[in-house]
Image (cartoon, rainbow over all chains, first blue to last red; front, side):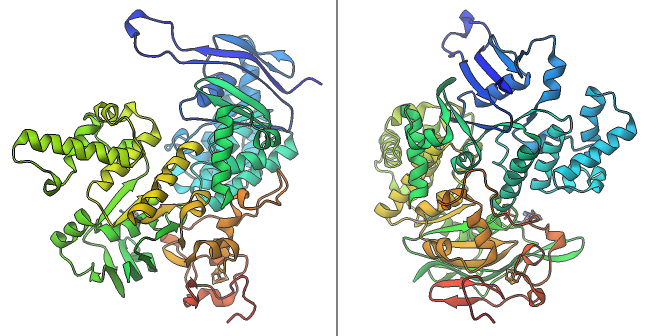
Length: 259
Length: 332
Ligand SMILES: Nc1ncnc2c1ncn2[C@@H]1O[C@H](COP(=O)(O)OP(=O)(O)O)[C@@H](O)[C@H]1O
Ligand code: SF4
Ligand SMILES: [Mg+2]
């Protein structure tokens, strides 16, 4: 079976080495390899600055890799089918707070990707916005709200709605739960799992919260200093971590849970 | 005797729609050598309590309490000068995002030496004093587990990793040899191994130096790994307070239970990818506070009585405010 998303030897070299930048270490990411099937969740875990967010940006095409390939349903993504990527792999950024324009209504925020990427007319777009708002547990009336009128959880739902509105196959999220309070976080976790079941979404997320990683992910990719030091099934990683850093992560988490 | 004793602390903020109770009868105590967690969602008033303790509230806010004492001394009746004295000698505060609380343009060594009190410095001449300050600074860094003190003191904040930076903040806080350390979300956004380092350090300081800690956070895993007692805050009301283990195993208040349910790690029997127990809705804004029990509109156990504020009830050292508590068959 062809995986939904396959990443092969993806790497990224920051800039070119310049002599006058001596002493400043160059950041190198990769090579990264993984596969994701429809309905599966991959968690990316690792130190701050290990390249997790950069990897996410490479996947959605905000940054360009220096080598390696990404396949969506077996088809290689290139500069020529960039549109296809925009529609099918959508990103939720780290701070949904900052990524939502405060000056326009939620309706306009959701309208934008539709106007840019589809042929829908105003009526169809409005229908789609209402449908998507309901999908993420908001009300049609939230179209007329501005960012500041929403709670953290509602903002996260809007960010999710904006990612979902183009019917993507993969959603990539950078720390989607970090800014959320515990009781609201559970709601969003449940919502994501539900949408994934219903729509067969592939979900890739970055998180420090190993409790949630363990609960919702099928696979884990562990990153350290730009390298994927270990990857595997969630269960295997938590029970039989091989890499030294992975062992440290898992032990630290167990130490917190243990008592 | 408790170090810190707060009973029915109420804080009213003047707004367009009249006076609003941002804190409504918040109560807890902190004993010598205790680690108490203060838990609640953002906007629940955790930081307001911290600010009330350190006296950093605007003059036009109404603050009342039946009791608010530090070592038996009434904090509310002290003037600014006396308050500052207590803060300088006894209470230190550290925040999340250590990098933002440090001066980015000044080497860390200078920032640390600056907070060392003059009366701890030995020597008569300035060069002796300088040496003494440097010795004290190096010692403080060793205490928090920073081995290469020279490198750390020469560095600027942006050059250090998160955990080293937070350890440095703790070293700064320890310079005044405080009795109480207030840590406001000190491990937010940290990777697990880093977080565990900081938690271990705090635990060690508590055990070795009898340092009392008020640990403000909503990271339940972190809290349950180190705190002795826990106070749960919802919308400015203390809903439950008591020994950590009891609140974790048998919470009486529906909100405490919701918090515990939000950490999948606490539930060993939870099948992977199964829905988490979640409470509907979100925390209301200060402008739209429900009357009576503020959890009312979200609470699965709410009944008509809940529009009346529940009394504080007590079972040994475990306090809760709820008309229909969990795990208690004969309710009111
Ligand atoms: N300067 C202020 N003016 C008006 N309301 C404030 C002010 N500072 C905080 N608040 C309100 O007080 C409540 C509690 O805030 P805070 O203590 O910061 O919560 P937490 O620390 O639990 O996140 C919030 O609803 C917040 O909006
Ligand atoms: S008092 Fe009523 S509304 Fe409040 S927590 Fe108890 S049952 Fe729920
Ligand atoms: Mg706060």
